[in-house]
Length: 228
View (tube, rainbow, N blue to C red):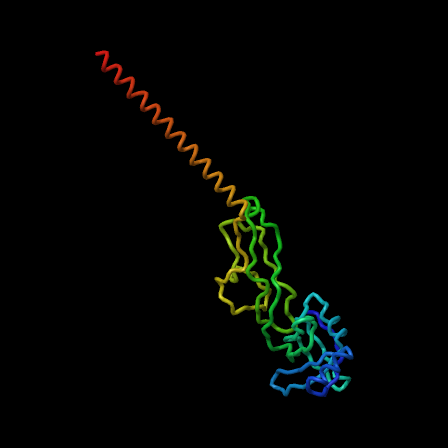
């Protein structure tokens, strides 16, 4: 699990105006809470935090929050708030974590392998889940959950119960929830429709041929009867 150090200034002033001033200075207002202790208000450098989260773990990066040398909090970014128009981060919540106590986090799902059997039949892969909530020790949070789709066919799908979760990682989600499933593309459906029409046409031609042969036999029998 990736870890990094971020410097935080405790005791920031509360309110909209002080928060705006902080953001104008390139700092982000934050709150640290959890583990049954009182929450504290802090601010961190926006650029420093953004750089700290550029690891493979993203928001699940374990951060050592250095409160200007006074103490250090082991935290994870629990949530961020963004400006609805500019989409820039305006506030962050840090959750205190204990390495010995499992926490719930969302981990991205990564598809690996080539679904050859599905593609050869004109099908496509539809991913219905892009992350999964798991419970795991803070120091063992996986960066991603890999899902192998190479053995999939048009008759199979991959559900929660089929996932190969790393050791020590569990989920409370129902096993039957679909993660990845095959779908038939529009072009393939059109192709299947054409094939079906061709088969039906061939069948009709065969029936017409049989009817014509039957009529010929009846005519021959009638002619023979007339000769008698």
